[in-house]
Image 1 (cartoon, helix red, strand yellow):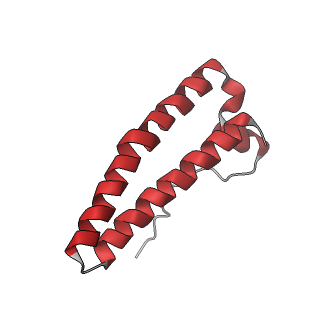
Image 2 (image 1 turned 90 degrees about the vertical axis):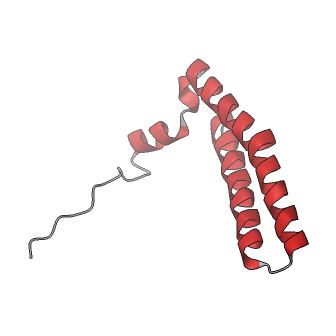
Length: 89
């Protein structure tokens, strides 16, 4: 696994954790827990995820081979994003 892939994997996992915390916040009835989950998700987003995104963008600008998505597209591993099909009715 390349450095670029590891960075993207880490970022995806962190974004997943933020999403999980937001879900916990919505699912609980306990106002103290709700406040805690919201605070932790905001902190994780602002203090960890956003700076890591900036770092990933910087690394990709300095080392284009770390552009994981573009590499996968070139190798045919990921499908091109497609527009929804239009149906005649």
